[in-house]
Structure formats: C-alpha cells, structure tokens
Length: 304
Image (cartoon, rainbow, N blue to C red; front, side):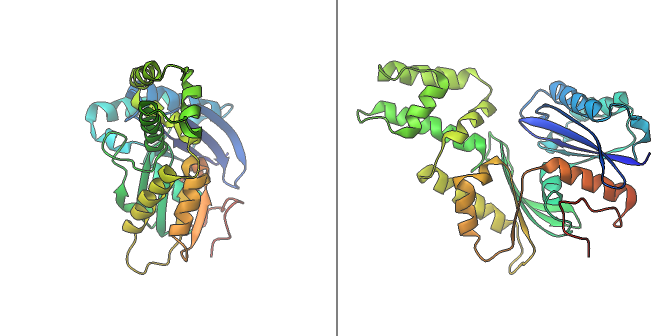
C-alpha cells in the first residue's frame, strides 16, 4: 500500500497521520508536545515516537513513501547532540528518510495548495514566514519564549499574570482578568499581599512555557490589542512590498479577540485560516512522495 506520514509537533501536543495515496486517512496518533526548545529533547523524541507509532498501527513503517515532520523549535536541531537524539528516534521507528520542516511551513500548507505566500503562527509561540515553493525562505519573529514570541499564548499568559500582579498592588476591585487568573491558580485574593506573593511563587515554580495556560483568559482589551499589533507587524515584515499572495493565520491565539484584531490590521489582503498543521504535513509528505500531481486533500481547493 502506498502511504505517507505527516506529523505536527508543537509546544503543547503532537499529532501524526498516515495517509494513503488517494488521500484516505489510514491512522492517527497523538501525544504531548515535542518542541525541543520548550521540552527536554529526549521527552520530545518520546512524544514524537508515541504519536507516530499510534498512527502506523497495522502498517509497516519501512513501507512509508515519505514522512514530513513539522516541528516547532527546529533551531534546536543545530545542536549536534539534540539532532543525534532525533536521528536515533527515526531509526528506532523504522521510517525511511524523514524530512523535518518548521511548524510554520506545514501550517501554511494546511490551508492552501498555493506554493507562495506568508504564514503567521500564533500558538504557544509566534512567528511569521515568507513561503516560496512551499519552503520558508525568511522569517520575522520566532525567537522563542525567552527572547520574544510577542503576541503568542506564552506572551499573553505572561501579560495576564503581570496585569494581575499590578492589580493586586492596588486597592481597587479586581476586574475580570485578575480574578480569572487567581481562580486558575487557586489563589484566594482576600489577602492581596499574600496573593501577590503566592502568584509569583506559582508562576516561577512551573516551566516558563506553562504561562501559556493563562492565554485563554485574555479577552478584548489592551493586552489583546497589543498582541494584534505585534502579530500584524511581523506578518507584514515577512512580505515583499505589494505582495498579493495569501496570508495563512494559524494557531489558537488567532481564533479569538487577538485574531480579530490581526484581521482588522490586515484588511484588504487575502487572509486564509487554518488550525490543523498535521494536514499540511501530510500534504507536503504526499508532494515529496508523488510530486505536484499528488491527490490534493479534500479540504484544499483544486490544484490549478
């Protein structure tokens, strides 16, 4: 049987699909995050293996015609020791050659069969990329949680916690966001000074990327507006002047008030929305295996 494997390895979860040459999904798998920047590399490899193994249930891994892995944090693979862990993982799985792309590249392919355009990703992290012939040739943003990722779920969560700390320092009634952050952490706001200390302790006791869990608490308002400013700015920075190719918006952050703000700021441009990078990875694997005449997935427009 001719089939390919597509994998979307993000900071929060990893999904894998085995897809036949005619587009039929043969198997799927899911595991935890596999971004080697935000997870220990050995843990990321284990999560990838778990998701791919589940997707290949009943199939011979060595028979796969192609495998494309879209991964957040691919810069980490420039570390030889980390790259060696992933290479060993592919060998243990018994897959043929694995093509590792950025999560932004598979995200773009998840929304369109067009070969050129721009992708704006705002999930746990954030990045914008210029896509040419289905590969990212330049980027804006994407520095990771420590150095940037403005507008991302991590950034929103951090800003939510910071806003809560500032609110606790005052004497006015706590508004919706601080109250929600304190509920999420199980902190009693009755003693504001104690709540302030406790929130700092809780935030610092977890992995920094865990701040992303507060992002869904951020509604319309100044924080969302600032996030939209950051994301629209990097999307435009990734494009050539006068470019008319599509912009693909991807990630949980772009499905809420921040996404609305980004669309407002990009009015007049061809905006597409996708939220399933694993489909893009499977499509790119099909192109790797069968060329441009590969069967286009049903969720894409017909190939010209």
